[in-house]
Amino acid sequence: MGGIMTKKDNINLIENLSKKRLVELNACTNCGYCVDWCPVVSTSEDYRNTPMEKIRKFNSFVQRTHGLKARIFGPEKIDPAELEEFAEDLYNCTTCGRCGAVCTVGIHCQELWSDLRLIMRKLGFGPQEYVDCAVKILEDNHNPFELPIKERNNWVPDKVKMFKKADLAFFVGCELAYKAKPMAQGVVKLLNAANIPFLILEDEYCCGFPIYTLGDRGKEFELEVKHNIDGLIEKGVKTVAPYCPCCLGVMKRSWPEVKKLPFEIIHILGIVSDAVDEKKLTFTKGFKGKVTYHDPCYLSRGFGKGEELIDEPRRIINSIEGVKLIEMEHNKHLSLCAGSGGGLRRTNLELSTEMSIKVLKEAEDTGAEILLTACPAVYERFKMTIEEGAYKPKIKVMDVLEFASHHL
Image 1: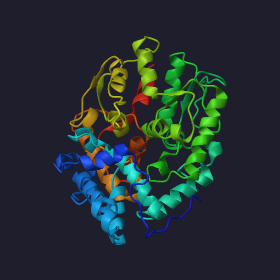
Image 2: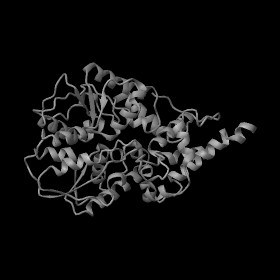
Image 3: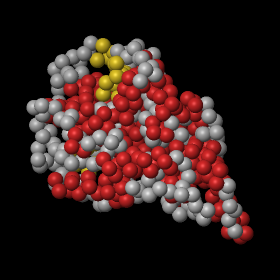
Image 4: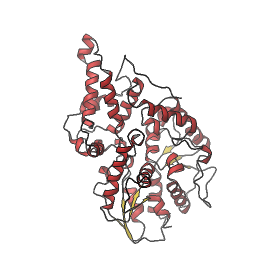
């Protein structure tokens, strides 16, 4: 397996941090503005676990081991209990990026936390057993659900036309393939309706995000990534389009660090939205009713790089005749996190469930009949909450493209 980590006495907290990360860590003014916007803090009421406090703690560690006093008199040994507490707090976060959306000095903790988890992982702190387990599952199954790879493409609908060679590859992703099949089916039906040729990888592996976000970027991560890149190169595609926001993020951020990409990566919502705008895709069946839309974290906040997709899903929804889209109280850049990201479902299921209930209730408050989302992790999180009896919403949950495909 990927290698069980053990705690190290000799620590270097900054050797793997970029200059940008070091600047961000020093930029925090302790204004506390992020505290009011953190969905984990507001749900758990754990004010020890604020973005501001995590940055303060890590900076304290850095000063004690790498600061001026440490350089003159030698580094101070940090109590492992302090490092363990800090690492545990790092994982009680969905990396939703909401704090970065409001940060007055532009600190994007969404990426920062992932890099700090990598450091703590290497030092042996945090929920190592969960991370080791996640790595082992990917090693054995190439998906995080321990399901057979031969069943990965069982979602493909009858009569959908796919090609062996095409410029566009639809990167399905594990969650769509195994847990959110209606989302994948909606995608291919719409691509067919718009006469857009596409292919999928017959032997697609995980994008690597499940272990990436937990702080592991070792051999297994590289194996999963290289397998997919090599397969896509062999197909000769020019564009790769995932639907899952987690896939999109890791593909754009980390795949190029593993291997140079000869293709462009864009989100499938952009392709479908363009097809609607260009009249290549039209909806003949109307819908008389109210819907609301939940902006997924990794789409609405775009990893702090201005790559957000906010207008595209709304254009698709509003192109269906008769639909009345009602915005949730928290929407677009400031949408609430549903508790499904950052590995929280694995490390703190109770908190993850509470966060999903909060979003479901906010959706119900709009008076809409249907809650639409565009993230398979959120889709599955809501499904888990409902099926496990944690909450029975009065609103129906659907995916945006699944909903759109019913109105062709």
